[in-house]
Image 1 (cartoon, rainbow, N blue to C red):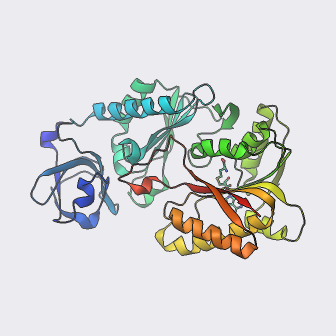
Image 2 (spheres, rainbow, N blue to C red):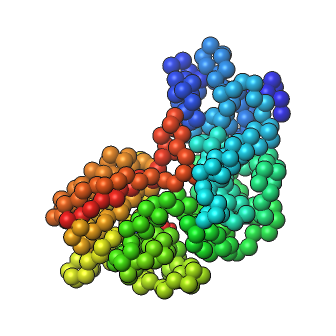
Image 3 (cartoon, rainbow, N blue to C red):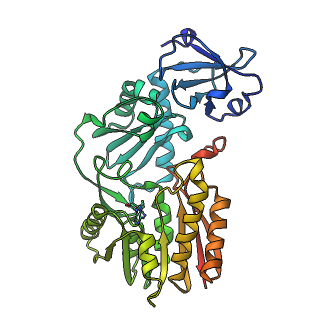
Amino acid sequence: MVNRRMKTVTLKKLKDKLAKNKNPWIFSGAIHSADKGIINGETVKVLDSEKRFIAYGFYSEFSAITLRLFSWNEDETFGAGVFKQRLTSALAARKRLINSENTDSYRLLYGEADGLPGYIADIYSGHVGLQVNTASAVYYLPMMKEALTEIISPLSIYVRPADELAKKEMIRYPEQCIYGNTPESIIIKENGLKISASLISGQKTGYYFDQRENRRIAAAYARGQDVLDCFCYTGGFSLNASANGAKSITSVDSSADALSNLKENFALNGLEAPDTVKADIFEYLRERNADSQKHDIIILDPPKLAKSQSSVEQALRAYKDLNMLGMKKMKNNGIFISFSCSGRVSREDFIKSVAWAAKDAGRTLRITGFLSQSCDHPINPFFPESEYLKGIVGIVE
Ligand code: SAH
């Protein structure tokens, strides 16, 4: 495709400031006019009200986010080269940041933050899990495939559509393997531990790489300690704590599949299996309110509790309840580690809900550290939405 012939979209006056400041999202309300016949998903040239070039962007006809900008350089010719350049740069950053002796699996490409909106690519020991979030991500899949095979020579590429694809972008794309053969499960290495993960049937893209560094941070406190890992999934925190000499571990999750995967992971590493409990954490902690057993370390890593803007208030109450229930089970001087992965809940509001939780639990919390998503989920400073995981570590008395 040649940029000269590219269709254009013109923004309203005074609605172009964020775009000019490199924020990649443009909502439908900011658009003044668009050329006729733009195909859903196609690349367009975005202009200001004086018809001056701002950026190139991906067009989503049906989404409230109509444009996702990916290049502010008018001379950059659109084509597979753009995909290759973004992947090369993303790979160089991961190679620089991640210790490949201990970790062979990570997020290679994190959408807008890596200059390719709509795509998330995770590496699982040489296999690629590719999430497509937008009409453009599907439209340009052949270019993405070409770039991935050339830049990283993967063993296979397995594509999964994000929930938004059908709901917000009106595109149906069935999950499928588009290159090589993706096995049902893959043994990956993270922080020196073996983990069996599934690109095909695991939650989200299969494994939560965003907690890799926090697992190490939590594990550093674990020697000789009694640990309660809430929302343990396949054992990310539990495994790191066990390998670091935890005395005892209780791992709790509502998913039986996740717990059986967790046990498999302990066996893979020759570690003694922890106590596993299949339960709703809220109920589990409430029921245990009266028992006297308390823990040296508690980890709370719930799923996204605020799924939309309208559910933020409700989510904040849930975070408060959860953290209150957790803090009640802490030993004196215990280490409390708590997260929110809701992009819509700000760090400030999350900390407030934890503070109220401490008050209602009748405990004193001193925050000793702030946690975020791991380095392979970089944050674009012009795009605060790329920061979604926030956590605290603290001492509870
Ligand atoms: N800590 C994990 C990731 C947690 S993802 C890791 O390090 O990999 C969130 C987990 O919470 C999922 O495994 C999901 O099954 C579980 N879950 C969701 N709602 C739950 C609930 N109400 N009670 C218990 N577990 C829940």
